[in-house]
Length: 168
Image (cartoon, rainbow, N blue to C red; front, side):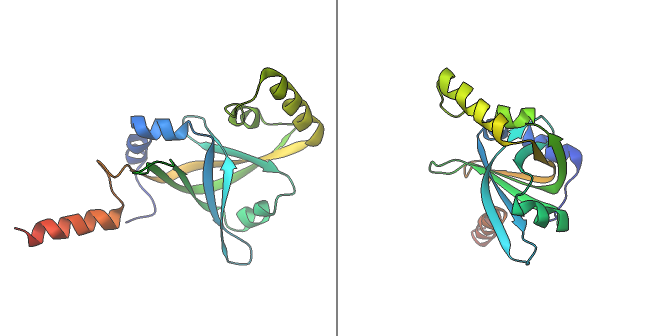
């Protein structure tokens, strides 16, 4: 399978109801290659703006050195139920240093359970801590939705096809 898809194919995957549900979740797993060549996979808060996944991090985060060196990333957004629902996205990270707190950072942390008072205290703490942040923006170049009902991992789809051929 190719590492890239046509824009309309990506849009079709990302516009499915289950994809939209997964894109509304709090956390994704960001996979990238560290500067030393070893893989990393970290949970990170994100928001979907309709065409891009936006994550935010500190300006001194080690992952920024790696992403500047090799901006290729893979994202996994999934559920904790059986069968799992998974949205897999690949793309290239663009880094955007922002003065103050990016609006997306405040949005992506808005779904955690906080009282109004906790939210005010949290936001004050964040604003006092960060002079600037870095937006990590990923425009999908490939996407796959796996629900284990209508879609399967590519290798499993291949095994199902082979079994059907054997049983003819």
